[in-house]
Length: 254
Image (cartoon, one colour):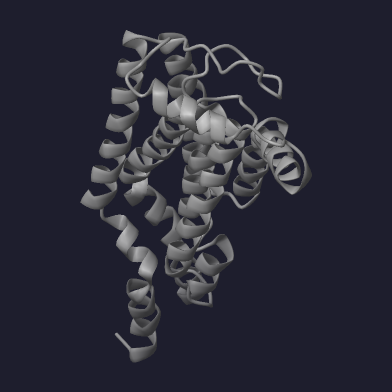
């Protein structure tokens, strides 16, 4: 085998994305911790939805969020509220279309399944299970059940999904830091708008990130294989030029 033939294979093996083939125990541990924290908070609140053990801390935080509700903070909170509402559905749909156009079938299925599992099954399931009353006089339209925060869960879920599917491994550390800041901002906005208690947002962010990380741990080998798979033109370019063996046999016949 020539040196030129070995070079593409060596460069592909040296790519950082090849590490995603292995299921990282750190990712599994972090997912378990986050989901365990969300479950523990849910059981604690469900035992006494009116006065859980940390209700005093929730009320003190809400008092700090008393206002005035105007100016730049009001604009930021309004944008984040809108992002977690209509735009929170548009962004995953746009990402799904992008993956389908690129024929990344595994990634598209991963995105669709994890988004439904996180935003529908886990968040809505916890809302119906706990059914915690919201703070008085929320400043935006809200649905039933304060626990957990769907906006915080959606923000954390989307951060992990985009990081896994679109961000190169070499740039993920910066993405995780930015994503954590974005999720914390979403948590702040929900309490600043009096739509949730602080513990609701903590549980929502933990549940959203935990579901996405657990799915990433489970499907990382399949996602890595799809990433390393050469595109159609690359496969065709790699084939040797000239007539096929069958045609060569035909040319050699007398």
